[in-house]
Amino acid sequence: MRIRHVVLLMISAVAAAIVAWPRSAPQAPVGGTVVIRPVAPAVSPVPAPVPEPSASLPPPHSPVEAAILASIGDSRAELRDVVTRRDAPQIACGEKRTARDPVFRRFVWLGHLKMLATDDGSPDFGNIAAVCREGQPVP
Amino acid sequence: MKRLSRAICTTLVSATALAVVQPVAAQSVPNAPTGPVETQYYANGPFATTTTRSTAACDSKGNQCDVFYPANIAASTTRLPLVVWANGTASTPDNYTIWLKHLASWGFVVVATRDQQTGYGNTALDSLAYMQAQDTNPASPFYQRIDFAHVGAAGHSQGASGAANAMFHSGGVIKTTVTFELPNQNWCNPADNCLLTPTLTGGSGSVFYVSGTADSLIAPDTQSGGTQLNSQTAYYNATPAGMLKAKGLLKGANHNDITGTPGCGLLGFLKACANGVYGYLGFPTAWLAWQLKGDATAGAAFKNGTGEFFTATAWQGRVSNIP
Image 1 (cartoon, chains in turn purple, brown):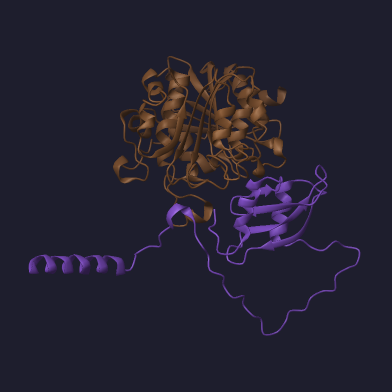
Image 2 (tube, each protein chain N blue to C red):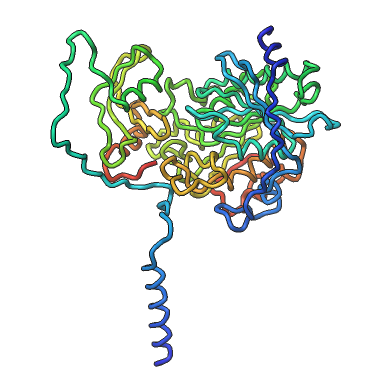
């Protein structure tokens, strides 16, 4: 009985050592997903001067918006309410409309895959849109 | 046509006779092969391979084509089967070199347009026409080398749609298609840039639908919303019973595992690559070897319910109608 107890203690100690041993390289999470923790934005001590926007020019697109519009390939496409996920900046969600489909519809943008999903009113889009929430696994 | 002829005449043969790199020992990789057919086709084939790029456009959108083929093609006593490859969104053949060279090592000539928007399949068909022109040009390395009675297509993501669309619009020239990570329709912009299930109606040829279990957001087996709109299962079910068809999901594979080199690297998870290309080498190659080279043993592996495919440990969600 005492021997069995000692063996169990030894096995537990070895298992604990394996678990605690630092990994030599980062490991990809199971299923290829990862949660990227948000990083606090760097604060500039002196605000940079910002040029006055011209009333005649459309507002400039952010790099994410430019990438989304490039993927749509429609010079008349418009975006609104685009939000980039803070903990996974490659993912953006918002609304878009195009010349062919002139109604604003929700979209999900996976920038690392250059893939854009459009709301077709199906429950499946609701599942895809869940990826917009912070903390959700990144595809 | 004149433009094509010039392209043919000036085809740049990069002629990098590439030593065939054998995949890592099968037992040490994710999704290792388990049966004889999968193990056979997991390994590279007997041919050293080389790559050529056309110096002029090979498709109607102005893209060049890369061609992967056995380096000794000139010495071949028989014509070789052709595989037309279609890239995923914003990708080029450079993203798939391990897979494409693997096919070439098994005696396939693979033509791949560098088009990055291949969903409609038109540029894949253009690349097929390019190879048909090469086959009639005495100055081409492919002069009378291609077996146009045995042409297949394959593609990834948007290109999976492109490969299937190319087959259904090829007038019967393309006999089979292997689709990797065929997206559901939400991801297609516009929607008809995807293969649409009605397109399958009345089609001919055969299809092997391949996806990964970790790619459930883009290329799911069945859609969780219940609409069954263009999931792998929906595509399989919509494929007419008169066509030979199979479907399977590689365990743990994400959207871009087919781009592995052969693994995904430490940062693979940032590009939706979980395990690498390993598990995709065996059965997809066996399917093409069966359909385009007549390997009946490879075909028997897909026999409904009892073939080797159905007991392979790396796969799940398997169905087929192969008698």
